[in-house]
Length: 352
Ligand code: ADP
Ligand code: MG
Image (cartoon, rainbow, N blue to C red; front, top):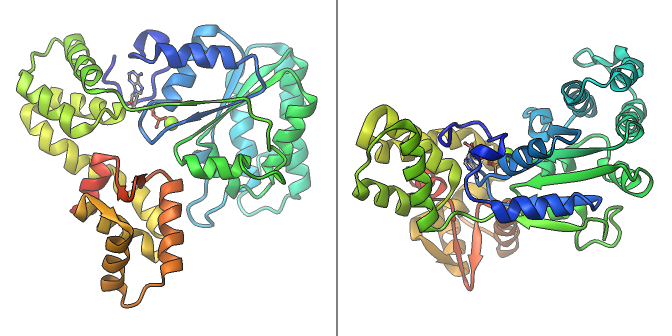
């Protein structure tokens, strides 16, 4: 079903993306690949569908699930648990079961328990070793930029895996592209992962023609007839972000033409938690985003003036640093001299 809101996990359900699928398949010969693109563009879907279609051994670790909102960390024990449970989903192979058995079972960490980080790190390494021993596997860290919050430094672990376990292929996906680059250390010769990743696959929004075709096909599956005018409006409002097209399709199936309004307001509501989490990290983020959303496209001076008007005095350096972070997180884009918010629903959410 094209309009299902879960990430697609089968190639038959994956719309378009043939080139990216091929590219991903080819890059599996290499040791480490990055999958980059804004939120809801289809990164998880691409990876899951492609790997399932190959029938290879892989584990899929959703790093966001290990993130703790309160401490704003990825506690080592949670990351380990995520990895361990994804290992359990992996395979029927007796060997894996056997080794899972030997991965310290007492490591179902009681909340608040103090387990030495070194112990957890060794267990994480043991998981990689296990996978390597059984003939290799692909290890996916989904939304891997969150690994930089991990209380066990994962970069040296991944470098070790890269250097010594040639059965392991690592895939890192990230919607906060700049932050994932920072984590990997793309420009940082001191990073343990510097120069080690092979290729990156960047996912782009669908163009208008593809967006239209996607909606038509999705509605076709449901046997729903939709007016061309409605399709046209949805296509121009949702800017080719597949996740929003899916959401629109689902809403339309439920409530007809109101869906065009609802996709914005309900989409904005869905975003609330995500945005609040970001805004809690700096008091400037919300003002900067609002400035840009209000103006549509804003120059540096516009942003600075707007923020200054909101907070009294704002230092150039601080606003500039915060703006740069928003770009790294993928919320703001720079186009020439202008800043803009690419995701139409995020833009809308900022204006509500
Ligand atoms: P991301 O991981 O980039 O945030 P997801 O893979 O979770 O994006 O996809 C967001 C939404 O869009 C989901 O509802 C998913 O089913 C849908 N989707 C993504 N890519 C495709 C695709 N190529 N074909 C059909 N649906 C897709
Ligand atoms: Mg995803």
